[in-house]
Image (cartoon, rainbow, N blue to C red):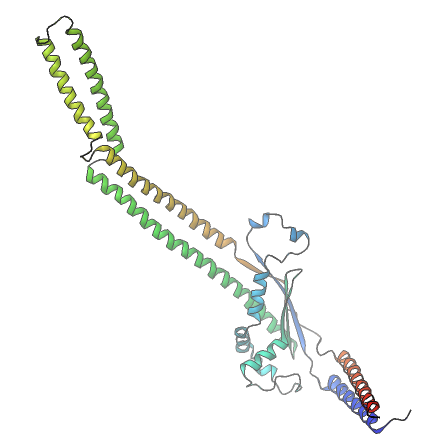
Length: 364
């Protein structure tokens, strides 16, 4: 089979590209070290952990805290975190250092924040393991100490972020309960003050007790009246109606009836401020005061419970694996990249020749 000039040219280009790839990956490409850390976020809610968690029995231990894990992941990969890392570790200088190869380093120290952030996402990864609920933090740098420093700062800042966020939320909840309790306290004091004002206005500590006393007096008067009427009926059986003894009994009966009418008037009357109306108004005020008091007690219990819940439901970040100090550069994968590049180059060359042959066949 005769090899044409175009075929030789394609193979020469593929050979040159492969040599360049071998030179770059074998000699030019700068070593990149990777520091890795594993963290997990768990709630300190001991009461809630007493219930049986079927997902935990199946091995999925991190499901309940997945939102917190993803929230911290987003924070660690944010622009704000990049700014903190750059301020403390001078990432721009490190990643743009001209002693590292051009294709691996950042183009320049003064690139825009957007370009710097894109490069940061290429060198730092935070992956969430949905099965175990673990966040895997990987930080790449051109030397081992810098990679370890980046990963360590990410772990430290992540823990600080979760603690501040949890405490801030708990504090807001407690402050809300305290404000509501203050309002309820004022309402309770106002309700109790209305009861006191009513008692002072009517000169009664307890209208209910006063009504009971009046009722007792009425019962005694009715009993006395019944006795006198019985006694008078007995006297009339042997005395004249105008006899002195009968007249005296009539006077006593008349006085008791007047007193009885007066005492009954204290209890019920359509035109006066009687005890039954006073009792009704007092009971209404007392009921409002007792209701406010119950709400106050409930609010106090709610505040203490809220403080307890806020303290025991804080999130705690546990470090399962401290950031490693790499001893060997894991990136770039030189032999793997060489082999893959050569294979892809040969495949592209073969496809190019095949397409050329198909086109020439159609022309003929």
